[in-house]
Image (cartoon, rainbow, N blue to C red; front, side, top):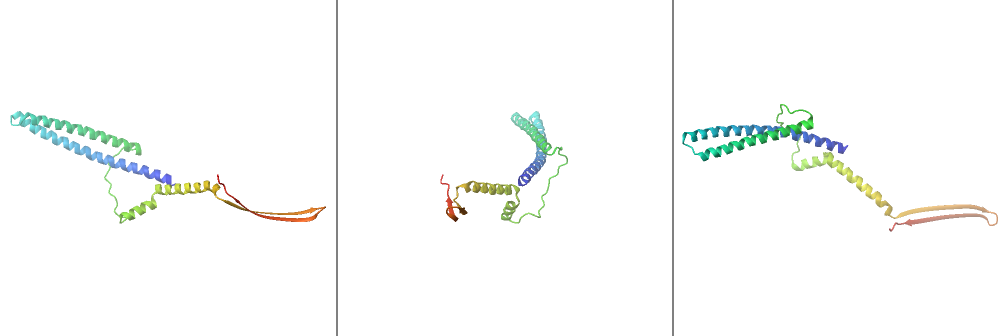
Length: 183
């Protein structure tokens, strides 16, 4: 059950990560779009200055290169945004629509880092699964070693016999036997 809980938590964590990645990439696409608009505006101003004879041709070429870089950055950010949406869809089987930035609740959090670590160690199913695995391995090791420990047996035997020649005989034996596997 701890392993199932661990897998479930891992899947939830992947979905949350994909959700946040779509939000982040949406924001970076917006910033790249705004950056491109600013570069286009600046390029137009420099182009007008150059055409009127006030600006230098080198400034126009530099602005053109920066404009091309801004376009490339926007294409790249849109590609990352598409990738993030694909991952989100693969995990949830739903297209990301009207996602909003979540705000974590402030109540219920441990007051100190030490308390947070203690709570994580106490409640984490992955740690509990590892502890169970360790206990099982230790028990298995002790079971395997049991054949190498000394074994003490108490053997009792009693015989009652009637022999026609000798007569009645009673024989009792007590034996303490110690066995130790040396090899």
